[in-house]
Amino acid sequence: MTTVFPLLLIFVVFYFLLIRPQQKRAKEHQAKIEAVGKNDEVVTGGGLIGKVTKVADDHVEVELAPNVRVKALKSTLADVKSRTAKPAND
Image 1: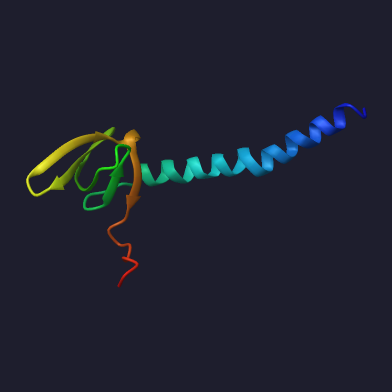
Image 2 (image 1 turned 90 degrees about the vertical axis):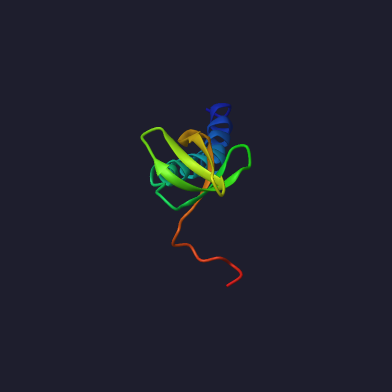
């Protein structure tokens, strides 16, 4: 019992300090990706920033510059900034 208890304690600490917060963050990110809509500003995994012009099941069309549109998989989106979010500078 004395050899099992410290290992169990270490696992419990790792679960609450590392595993659980990471799972929570992943769920929040997945929810943001699923809720992406037209006119949202997105950041791709490659660091490109653009505005969503069209949404499909597994991909989005992102306008990077005027008349420059690319298709990106939803799974490659790193961040979604909602169209209702206020800029920090204003």
